[in-house]
Length: 132
Image (tube, rainbow, N blue to C red):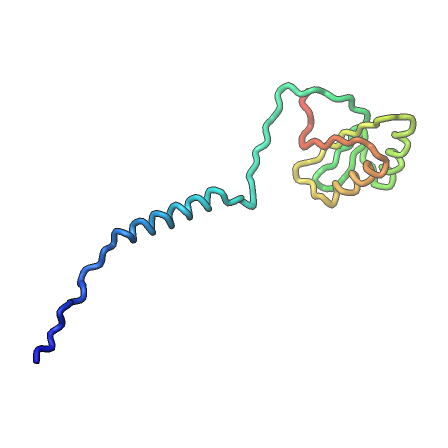
């Protein structure tokens, strides 16, 4: 008896369809990576050359040590509250220019802005002194 097989297993593999699959996977990952929303955006702020000077009624400076200066004199927080309360009397839209040192912590800034909000004062927050 002759027990020989008539069909032999193919010893080669056709890899042409594998290229199509890899191309579609690559395309899919490239598109999803482009549409992904980054969680952090780096923003560089522009400097304005021709700025309009606003009417400045009162200037408050907060330095990096947390000291508050009102009209070039150091002042404590309770006295600052009383000065702002006296300042807003008779004014419809009082404006206070708050100049904050670059290294100042928010624990020093928050009480000042809180007092200004308490008396509904429009405040302008600046990061550096305006050039004359």
